[in-house]
Amino acid sequence: MNYAMIIAIDCGIYIVLGVGMSIAFAWGGFFSLVQGAIFGFGSYAFAQGYLQMKLPWFLGILFSFVVGFVGSGMLGALLSRFTADFAVISTLALGVALETIFGNWNSLTGGFSGLYGIPRPRVFGSSTGSPESFAIYVLCIALLVVVVVLFLRRSQAVLLARAQAMDPPLLASLGVDPRIFRLVAFSVAGGITAIGGALFAQSAGYIDPSSFDITQAFSLIVIVVVGGAGNIYGAVVAAIFLTAAPQLIGLIPGSSDLIAQIQLMLSGAVLVVSIAIRPSGLFAERRFVRSGLATKSDGNQILLNGVDADQINAH
Amino acid sequence: MVRLLNLIIIGVTTGSLYALVTVGFGLIFNATHIFHLAHAAVICISAYIAYTVSVDHHVPLLLGFSIGLVASVVVGIACETFVYGPLRARGSDPRSMFLMSVGLLTVAEGSLGAIYGPTALSFSALPYTSVNTGSITVPWANIWMLAAWPVVVVVGAYLKWAPSGRMIRAISDNWRTAEAMGVRNRYYYKIVFGIGSALAAPFALLFVWQNGLTPTSGLPPLLIASAAVILGGRESLVGGCIWALVLSLVGSLSTEIISPAWQLAVIFGLTFIVLLIKSMMTEGGLLTGEAAF
Image 1 (cartoon, chains in turn brown, cyan):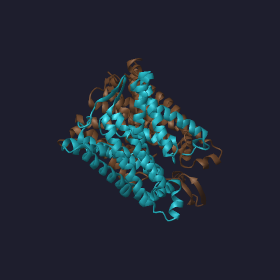
Image 2 (cartoon, rainbow over the protein chains, first blue to last red):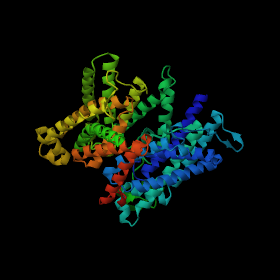
Image 3 (cartoon, each protein chain N blue to C red):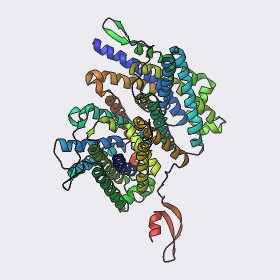
Image 4 (tube, rainbow over the protein chains, first blue to last red):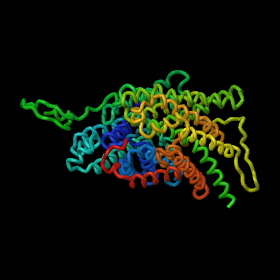
C-alpha cells in the first residue's frame, strides 16, 4: 500500500511538471530545455522559504510559484532574443550552467551537499507525514493546477498566446504584439513547474543539484511529446504512465535497483516510438481550422479562417 | 607564471581533444542539419565496448580500441539508416529529428547504466602518470590529446580534395541543389555519420583516460563541441576547432581565476553570452514572435 502511495505522489508531482512543460511549449511557443533548472528554482525556493523564513506550506508554494514565474520571465526574455539556429544550444548551455551554479552556490543551495530537513506540511492542523495523507495532499494540488490551467485555457489572453505559437505572422498582421503573450505564458509555465519543485522538496525532504540536471528536462520533453503539446489531459495521462510504469516494472524480482535506468530506457523508447509513429503526440490538440465552411446553428454558413474548432462547435 | 603556463598547456591539449569531437559532430550537423545529441551515446558505446573487450576480456588495448571504433561506426550509420533517414523521407522537421536523438540518447544512457552501473570505470592499461619538465607537469593523457590534430588535418584534407569530400561539402552548402545535380544525398549522409562516429572513438578513449567512464560521460563534451560548431559558424570546421580551443582555454584558466568547480558554468555561460550577442546582431530572430524550434 505504501508503495502505491509513493507512486501516486510521484505521479502527482510529474503531472504538475508535465502540465508546466506542456504549456511552456504550447502557449510560450518554444521548446525550453531549462525546465529542469526551473524545477530546481521551485525546490530551492520552497526549501529556503521554510529553512530561512519559516514560511508555512501554502506561502512556501506561493513563494515557489513567484520565484519560478520571475525566473522564467527573465530566462524567457533572454531566450526570445535567440535566432532559431542558436535556440537549442543556448537552452542546453543555460541548463548546464544553471546546474553547475546549483552545485556550487553553497550559501543558497547547500552546494552538492544539498538542503535537508524539509518537512511535510500540516494542512488544516493535520499532519501529512504518512504516505496516504501526503499523496492526497499532492494529488489535490495537482488537481488544482490542472483545473486552473483548463480554466485559463479559454481566456482571451491564452487564446492569443496559443494563436501566436501556431501562427505568429498572422497575429502580428492583426496588430497584436505576440512577444508579451509569449513571455507571460512562459512565466506562468515556469511558475507551475516551480510548484512541482516545491512538492518534490516536500516529498523527498532533501534536495540536491542532481535532481535538476539536463536529463530532467529530457524527461519532461517526453511527457509533452507523448501527451501532445498543449493537451492538458494528454500531459496528465503521459505523466502518470511514464512515472508509474518504471515503478511497477521495478516490482519484478531483481529489477528494484534499476528503477532509475528503467525509467530512462522507457522514457527514451516511448519518445522514439512516439516520434516515429505519431509525432503530434498520442493526444494531439485539435488544430485551428485553417479555412473552409461550417454551418452555424441558425443554418447559415460562414467562411472560416484561423478559428478554433472548439469555438465552432460551441455555436 | 609557471602555474599559468601549466593551465594554458592543459587548456590547449584538452581543446585539441574537443576539436576532434567538434569535427565529428560538425560534419554530421553541417551535412544533415540534425542536432545529433545521440552522438554522446556513440562516444559512450565506443568506450564501453573498448573497455569490455580490453579490460574484462584482457585483450590488448589497441585491439579493444579498434573494436570500439568499429562499433561506433556501426551505431552511427545505423542511426542514419534506421532512424533519421526514414524520418527525413517522411518530411520530418528538425525538431522531430532532435527529439528522436534525445530519445536515442536516453535509451542508451539507461541501457549502459543498467549493464555497467553508474560507477566510473578506467582503463588499467593506460598510464595515469605525468611528464615533468622542471616545474611544468603535464599528464600523459594530455600529451596524447595532441594526436587529435593529425586526425583533424586528415579529415580537413579529405573534405577539401577527395571527390566524396567535395560532395559532402556540396550537400552541406545546399542539399537541394546537390540533389538536383544528381548527388545521392542519402549515401553521403551515411558516410558523414560513419566518419563522424569514427572520430568519436579516439575522442572517447582519450577523454575517458583523463576523466573516467560513466554512462553520461559523453554529454558534457558533446555540448562543448556543439557550442564550438555553432559559434564557429556552421560551414567552418576551422572556426569550430578554434572555438573548441577557446572554450577549453577559458575553462582551464577559470579553474585558477575562479574555482575548478565553476568550470562548466564559465564555459557554458560564455557560450550563452556569445550566442546572445550573435543573435542580437542578426536580423530577424525571435523578436518577430516566431517559434525558435
